Amino acid sequence: METIDLKIEGMTCGGCVKSVTRVLAGVAGVSAADVSLEEGRAHVTYDPAKTGVEAMKQAVERAGYKAP
Image 1 (cartoon, rainbow, N blue to C red):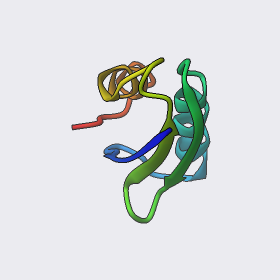
Image 2: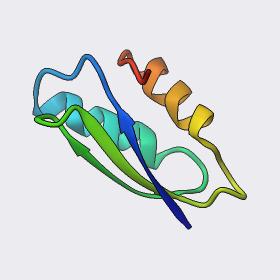
Image 3: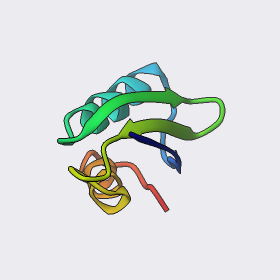
Image 4: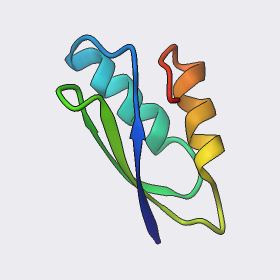
């Protein structure tokens, strides 16, 4: 397992945090996602054999947020 911090832009409330957490948790290979509104980031634990950073960023962007 590996961990990464993804910068997340566009979150404005607790509902946004729940949405981003949900979409990240839905990516195959992601075991945990801790999203912080205050820090504008997501701390994600994942299996690099099953997914990668690009797949996580795409999931966040499909949900309407930016992950530069």
